[in-house]
Length: 261
Image (cartoon, rainbow, N blue to C red; front, side):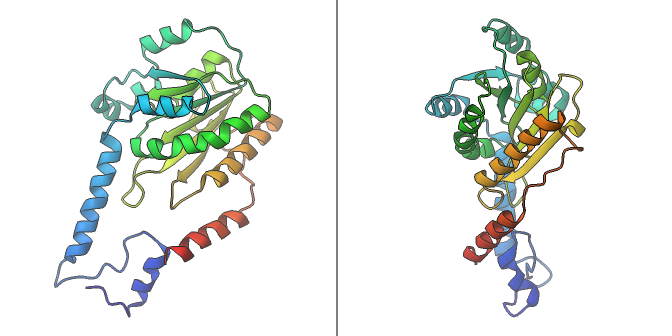
């Protein structure tokens, strides 16, 4: 059993990392073993339990925004995990669906993909869109329907942006779950995204959005800054640095740490 007088044990209040686990003889304590098994099960569920796209569509429609649900060439979860390349390509039915929709000249596209954590999108996509979409409309950006992508990888946003000839591509996606954060959402932003041409070096990533991580408000602040600077510089990615002040984010994290003690 962990000794409460151990200096390492006192650091547990500051991090979800597994430190000062203690021991029972030569083994872990029963409690720590069970906690690990639970965290592992939650991470597996986040990857394997399918996202309820019907409910997601209804929730976004309830915000008075239209949606369009599309499928990648990875038509099942096993194929999606084994063939990442297929999760970057729209299926023939998705391409046909886009081609039969009225042509819209868009400034920005917003894509929501299940990614590797359905739980992340289920919990965080709609609350974040509630903040983001009005901000984009306030900038007078022309927006097509929010595109919901089944079995999508980050680069699937390029194909959607390409179709709408949009300058800005914003992808919300479930991040690979960790043992302390199975519900982390990421945002990927690309300026002038082009299918088959844009690379990860052309994108900016805002990650770790969840209840014990980055807040929706802080993530939105970072994204709006990147959009503003990308419009000025006409590029995104490794050459576009996030220079938003970290003071408010540091204070926010300190508050989380304090109240979780």
